[in-house]
Amino acid sequence: MLARSALRSARTTCNARSSLGRAAKRFATSSSSNATSEEASSPFRLTAAGSVATALAVGSMAWYYHLYGSSLYAMTPQEEGLHATKYPWEHEKFTKTFDHQALRRGFQVYREVCSSCHSLNRIPWRALVGSTHTVDEVKAMAEENEYDTEPNDEGEIEKRPGKLSDYIPAPYKNDEAAKAANNGALPPDLSLMVKARHGGCNYIFSLITGYPEEPPPGVEVAPGLNFNPYFPGTGIAMARVLYDGLVEYEDKTPATTSQMAKDVVEFLNWSAEPEMDQRKKMGVATIVVSTALLALSIWVKRYKWSPIKTRKIVYNPPVGGDPRSRSH
Amino acid sequence: MPGIASGLYNSIFRRNVVFLSAVFAGAFTFEIGFDQTLNRFWDWNNQGRQWKDIRHKYVESDEE
Amino acid sequence: MAPLPSRASTLLRTCPRRLLQCLNPAFATSQQRRTKADVVERSSGQYDQTARFESPFKNKNDNPTTKIPSFANYMSKKGETNNKTFQYFMVGGMGLLTAAGAKATVQDFLVNMSASADVLAQAKVEIDLAAIPEGKNVIIKWRGKPVFIRHRTADEIQEAEDTKWENLRDPQPDSDRVKKPEWLIMLGVCTHLGCVPIGESGDFGGWFCPCHGSHYDISGRARKGPAPLNLAVPEYDFPEDEKVVIG
Image (cartoon, rainbow over all chains, first blue to last red; front, side):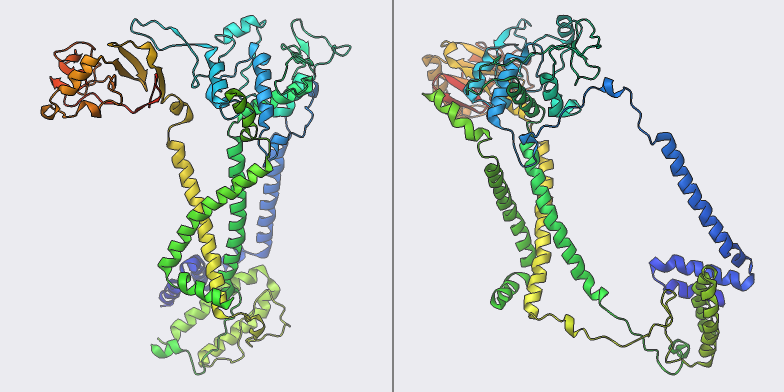
């Protein structure tokens, strides 16, 4: 009888509280039969269990930190190379695009200087159209290069002038040829270089402007390598290439070393991420809209909760016995 | 102000169908307007830096 | 029978208190008394009018109250319509922004599925027509398929136009198949099973498919053999006199 009514009352409690109801029922039956369960949850044991659990949690965290917490470096700071100076790149601000005039100059620097060793495999000629050059300029540049045709009727592969859909040609046929021409060192592809190197623009700028006149005393530079403090290991196969006045800019910008370095770094940043404008616009739009949405949803939450938060439930028990007992 | 509010209420909010349609139509127009505003801000913030700002230098010289 | 359920519920109600008792001995003693009183009240069928729930977290000396406070200070000074309009506006505004954001997200995913820039860049082919002499065929590759370009002679144009096209298998006048009569541009894929027909051959002076013997005339129309349709004409345009852009 007792259990039945207990069950009934447990059923009447809502779903969220059903577990509480069940626990209460169990407690009710056990407490009525014996008192051992009350001993099991005596204050001392509860305290002890809590303390042990806390000690275990803290201990395991401490142990984990002891094992994996401190970072491990493969190289000494000297071997990692000098940390690149942080420059205030205008195009890295989150509402700024590239200076496309600088991109045009940077492409000129790439084309006249870097492209003799470094490829730019991921950039097709057409990408330059509408970014740095006009269609006709790019077409003319593409046509200066020869590309393989599709096999003709005899299966021969012929040469044809480049088209807009072709990619900027690499200086070497393959990696092996590139290595052979550069004392075994492979000049890396530059298309994604800004993303691929720690420090990005700062690193590349520091690297190409950071060659000292001669290595500091006491430093031994391996044969065929050059000293550059910013390069991990400080021995770099690439020699200093940018010197004042190496390139003659068509817009009459003085071609100092740092100017050329800045332009080419900006160009390489563009080549690594031509979609930057779109990304930044999308980011701004997302931030604006989600801020507005956050404010609105906070308001709507307060609005929906206000009747619940401001209500007061008053219970006036009826006089004259339990209505439930009367109904039975 | 009460005139505007009650007018708005009676014309749009009173019927759920109208309210929902207004929300979706509004979403559509909002997106267009928002994108335009954003692009205008972008162009203003990047004056002289974009290709369309320097394009005339190279296109005209080709035509001449 | 009657008092039993009430006793059971009393028991049930006391359970949480017992749970609390083990956590807080001081609380337990204070509650013990009340529990007893409760049971007495229940069994006598009388309710204590001053009975109240005592929160275990509350200071017992607090003055309890069942008085409903006045909410008059919180009442809006603005009219009901104003408030309702504002509320609907806020809720609608949230829906609007959410809908716009959802639309943009879905759209971005769909755009992502469309052809990429490098595919689009190769989707058009530009051909210099000045290099093709009269009466010659040229086959170029466009989107991986051969495209026939024929510089037709005046006789051929005459022949193509004079053919009684109404009775052909796939009736089509020559004027529907060319933009300029001297330039016939078609996809070089046989409409039967996709072979590449051979030019300047066949019974009708046009193309002949070696695979299953379909014959096409000088306008590329299917005349004989299993081919059900005329050779397809791609989209093309003449931006300049001596130039055609296919695609």
